[in-house]
Length: 162
Image 1 (cartoon, rainbow, N blue to C red):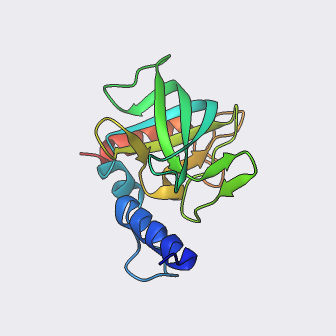
Image 2: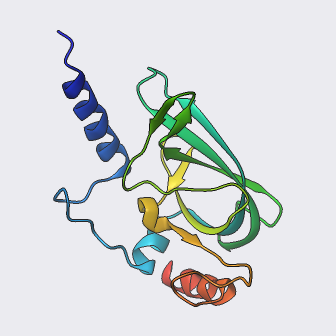
């Protein structure tokens, strides 16, 4: 029996299980900076170097590997200035097929971002808190929507992670 809607629902439910879901659909939980810091293994100020979409093993979900060039670690011992960090994000486009997940972080080539990362499977990293764990940085090094310099925010994150 092949029921496309059932298959899609199972895939979405599986992603919610893997990446975490709010307790009630339609009611997102707003995470504090403390929540993001404590759920992350790293937080970095970085530039998006590349986006590489790929299918999962059973060819049912598109993921995008986001390669970040670390400009400065805000909270990390593993990702120093000049190193790269690879983050897996659900969604992307391959050929004429595209997938978009509403709570997933979205990245664009060459943009500057602050990213909170957590371990997913093995050494693979995902954005902690979905789209909430990705913050845009303007050309002057200030977090968009917050008006805080990245350096000041980094000090705050380090203090909250303790």
